[in-house]
Amino acid sequence: MPTDPTWQTRLLHFQPRVPPGFRSLVTPVYRGSTTLFPSAAGMSDSWRQHEVGYTYGLYGTPTTLELAARIAELEKGEHTFITPGGQSAIALIYLAFTRAGDHVLVPDSVYGPSRHFCERLLARYGVEAEFYPATIGDGIAARIRPSTRLVWCESPGSFTMEVQDVPAIARAAHEGGAVVALDNTYAAGVLFDAFAHGVDVTMQALTKYVGGHSDLLLGSVTVRGGELHERLGDTLQVLGMAVSPDDCSLALRGLQTLGIRLAALERSTLRVAEWLAGRHQIATVLHPALPSCPGHEIWRRDFTGSASVFSVVFRPAYSREAVTAFVDRLKLFGVGYSWGGVTSLAAPQFDLAREHPSVNGPLVRFNVGLESADDLIADLEQALEGAEVLRC
Image (cartoon, rainbow, N blue to C red; front, side, top):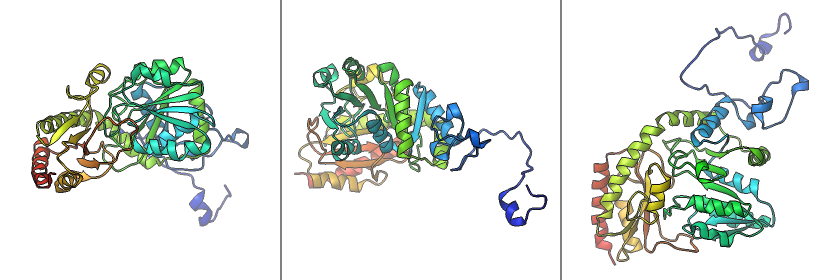
């Protein structure tokens, strides 16, 4: 420092005089793009910050890396990468493990934007995606080719809630030399032990249960290590998927209440689902924890709990207009996508893209929030009564 710098210089070059040693229960929010190195010789542009130290804000600040470490610990993985959302986590996996000429296997019940990524982007770069019946189990071996590099699982499936035999699929995929990836968002990374069941790489939308309040967008990709870790890191670096430390701070806060939220959501959701199962308007309740739901036995074998999302299929007598009117009459359920937050939601689906359809009839997916289950049931009852007048 000059001996007598001007005030303009002192605004930027200062010597703080705050006392050291502050400790808090809350992780600080570290914002910053530029990282300062101790010397010119020590400058590095590497995403491996655990090995070489902090190099650039794009690869994460201490706030980001603490969230990553917490997710890895919960999922029993070795490394986690944080991404700007669930869809970006999905894209990272596809791009890290495929190249032109490769073949990927994706469950037909997969999350819609994941399907769109295959059909709209991967296809442009010469990667062929084949959509297999979600409940195929070890029968997937017949679909694995020499060019199959990646096998996706998503259990339960989006909207139609198919429970996959992930261990059987993983065994077949590994025998064929393919990487097994799982969208583990339904389980919040904790209700299904992905790595113990043979999965190589997991992702989840932290937007949902980890965030828990519908106010952030984040995703995670977790892996055990080795070559898979390197491929993910190298791909992430060139994609430039930066995340907000403020959002990471909200996710860290969400982790503190994840356990009690999941327990409360499970109780209320089961009550609502069981009540709907007794309504004459409903043909099927697709909730994996119900014995009547296809895949229940596998769910009971592999999962330690259920979540807040499930679907119902209306009887054929109820037209699209009737089901739409039912959703519109709901007062406590917002109409919207996503799930995992504290507010209940309803999302009707009439034209699901499926090569191997598993349900027939209009479908509504529910996210049960933290409202009183009695109030939610009363709301559903009045909405169902209103739909009666529009029956076919």
